Image 1 (cartoon, one colour):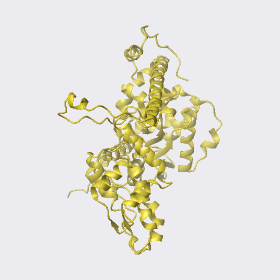
Image 2 (image 1 turned 180 degrees about the horizontal axis):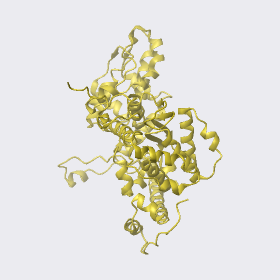
Image 3 (image 1 turned 90 degrees about the vertical axis):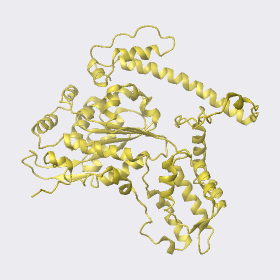
Image 4 (image 1 turned 180 degrees about the vertical axis):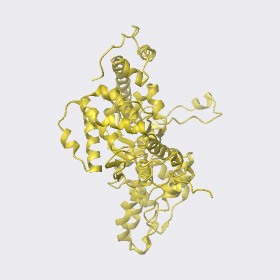
Length: 499
C-alpha cells in the first residue's frame, strides 16, 4: 500500500522539525489566487448609506492583486525560507555540532566567527522606486507562507535541545544614518519584539561593533532565523555610506551561517553590489528583481492590476469612457500601483460626498481627486515619473532613471527634423537649466564615489577580498575608468580588517 506523501516535499529527504510547522509550499501556478485579497469581497458595502461608505475607503489599501511583475519575487522569498530551513536541519549531527560551537563562541571573537564552517546561504534583491509595491509583496507573501512568525519547540533528545524559540524571519529597516551599529541594534530590537527577550537593552550602549556583530549573528542562529529582511535601503544610507562594504561583509557573514538575506530598496542603493561577483551570485538565488512603473504597453498593468482593483469599488456606477479613464489613471499615477490606489480612493471619495441614493462616478470626480490635499503631492511624484521615463533630467533625487521612450520605427532622420522645435517658455528654460546643473553636479559626485569605492576595496584584508570576489583586476579596471588616473593601484594591505 502506498504511503501518503508528506505535506512538505523536503521531508521526503527526512524529518525536519524546523520546517514541519509551516503550511505546505504554494505552487507557482497557485500564487495569483493565494496572494489575492479583497477586503470587500464578503461585505455588503452597497447596503450602507453613501456617507458611511467613506469610512471604508482606507480599507482599499488592504486590497492585493497579484500581477505577473511580482510573482517571481513571491516565489523567490518562498525559496529562500524553505532552503534555509532545509540546510540547517537540527537532526543532522554536523549541524548540531556547528550550532553548539557558535553558541559558546566568545562575543569578542570576531575571527572565530569567520572561521565557522561556511554554509551555502543565499539572498534576494528587490529594488524599485517608491510606490512600486516591493515591500507590499514581501509582507503579503510572509502572511501566507509563515503565518506564525515564532514557534516554540519543547524538549528534544534527537535535536539535543531542552527548549528552542524559533523565529522564522525578522523584518527591519536599514538605519537612517547608514551606520552598522544602527542596523545591528535595530535587529536586536526586532528580535526582542518577536521572541520576548531584552537583548537591545543589554547592548544599546555598546560601541564595540565587532562584538555587536558576533552577538547578532549568534542570536539569529540560535533562534533559527531563516531570513533577515532589510527594507528602506536608499542611496544615502547604503551605497553612499562610508560603511557600504562593511554592510556587504555583514550580509556575507549571515549567509555563511545559513541565514538568507533579502534587501529591499531604491535601485540607487545597490549600485555598489553589482560590481561584486560573489555577492551577486548569492543574491541571484532568490533573484535580482527590479520593479518599474508601468507603461501603457505593459500587459500586467491593465490585464492584472487595473482589472483587479476595479472590483474593489464602493460606488454603484462609473459613468466615464473606458479609454479616457485608462489614460487618465495611468498619467496621474505614473504607472505606480501605490499612487494609483491613492488616486482610486480620492475619486470614489468625491463621488460619495456628492450624496444621493446611489454613488455614480463622473469625470469631474477625477479632476476633483487631483485637487485633494491627500493627492496633490502624490500627483507631483507621478508627473516626475512620467518625465523620468522619457528624459535624462529627473526632478527628484530618489527617482532612478527608468526607461527611455524609443522613437517609432520607420521614421527617418529627415522627418524628425523637418519641423522646427517650438521655443520653450522662460520658466521651462530656467527649470531645465537648474536640472542640468544638478545633473552635472551628480556626475562629479558619482566620480568621487567611484574613487572612494576603489580606496575601500584596496583596504580589504585578503580574506575579506576573497569572500567578496574582489580581485586586483577588478580594482585595476575601476582605476582605469577614472579620468586622469593612470597610476597602477597600490598593493592591498596584507593584514587587518575593515573598520
